[in-house]
Amino acid sequence: MNIAIRAAGRAGEIMRREQNRLHQLNITEKAPHDFVSDVDLACEATIRRCILDMYPEHCIVGEEGGSQGNPDSEYRWIVDPLDGTSNYLHGIPHFAVSIALEIRGKVMHGVVYDPIREEMFTASHGEGALLNDRRIRCSKKTSLKDALVGTGFPFRKRRFEQAYQAMFSGFFEQCEDLRRAGTASLDLAYVAAGRLDGFFEIGLQPWDMAAGVLLIREAGGVIVDFAGGDEYLETGNIIAAPFKVIPAMLQTIKPHTVKGINR
Image 1 (cartoon, helix red, strand yellow):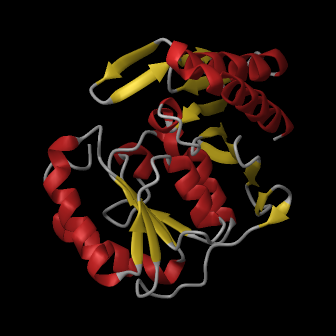
Image 2 (cartoon, one colour):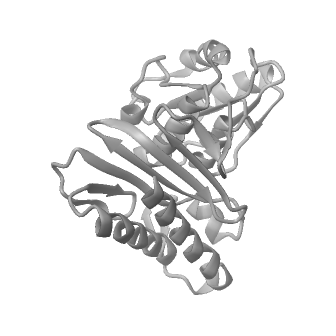
Image 3 (tube, helix red, strand yellow):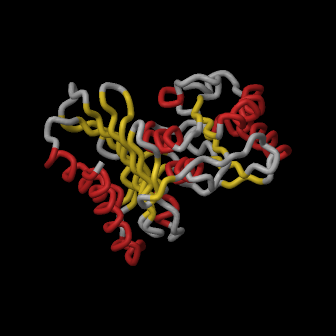
């Protein structure tokens, strides 16, 4: 955990330092509507160095650099060096570093760091979830009524736009309101901290959610896929909320899970 916190902090320093020269950054469209910048690459390189200098026998899977280190290791780090790249490049101060450590196939440690607000969300399996060393818990909501629900548009899977819009409408009819902030790892951290009462999204990647999933579980919440199972890291589809809110969220989403949506 100390290494994860140190790595996240150093990546955050790069983000803050480079904010004043956004117009000078090299930006590449690695996929339609999905961008990578010099800052993403520099942050990931820094995180990899922090981890591999201490644990050279471990494996690291990052959003930008793929897999490095020992591919047969029981220790696998799952890293998103700059979650919310589009926000960052537009000067919107809402982005994060996400780092998780998976041991023998189970996520055991997770960090989500917001370098602008200097908020460090951390969790270790069986030890609870913290925000800057203060314990956090999911909200006590028991229904969608009066719930504030976070979401993310399926920008990587735009073919599911109609299905998503139907889900969105279903939630909008029932809950207090919805939020789309553009940084999934922080959305999940906010569910863990009780700032959001629930969250759902289509087509995430493991590095978007591995740390956030552990935060929510350690904060007393529940994570499921769109079928109500635990294959969210495989399908990319995630629902997160307090236990009593999950059934209503599933009931809202399931009628619109069209063919192919589960990868």
